[in-house]
Image 1 (cartoon, rainbow, N blue to C red):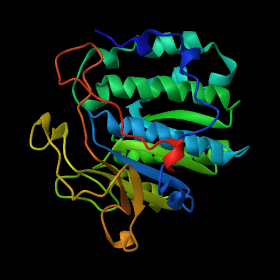
Image 2: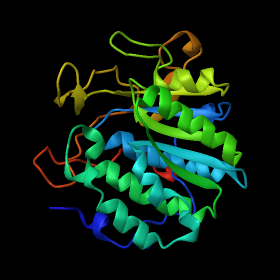
Image 3: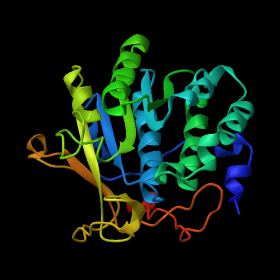
Image 4: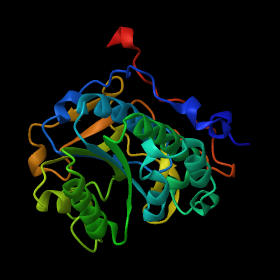
Length: 273
């Protein structure tokens, strides 16, 4: 059964005038491009990124910025010019895209579709200052990075926020990668980058090592609530830091095939800071 939010008019997905706080996000302000390593198939990675995108859009003010997602480049036909077209029509095209009718990996999840829903509304409300960009031009580590940096230059974007698989978010190639990772190539193009890996105290994700399936995530020591940490020695590590959630939970496929029911991101309330 498809959740009600995904069937509602796009106008109902409009972001609130204020953003929920995200401890540590201000530490990424120094970078032109902030790359979040997505733990595919979870509720928490897209939900935290949505929170970050709200803060990113607010901090940009009148300056142009890009929010990039690991989605097929064909989505850009519906993402471009969202401030000048019918949101409901654009959303109907996105929702009907065949990408959502399969489940090759966790990007095809209901949580990812929910994220796209909200980011489209945010882009439209920005009056052209915030562009939503699908980056999965293959091979994504090389051509996706080129698509982002070329678009930043052509539209005069000062900054970008990207959600992409955490292997692509690395600054250093790992064994088995055919090229330098996406984040490395963005930095090599002359942009300052902060890359963040996903960490959690437990839970499950759609892990593709060696085969893709729901599996337990690598458990990290308890670090409290939701937060972003940029490490002092991050320049010498595969990622500059991490974003942390207490638990990762699986998001089901958009078509409702059975995966464990997902839960909401444990987001701190405005009162708790």
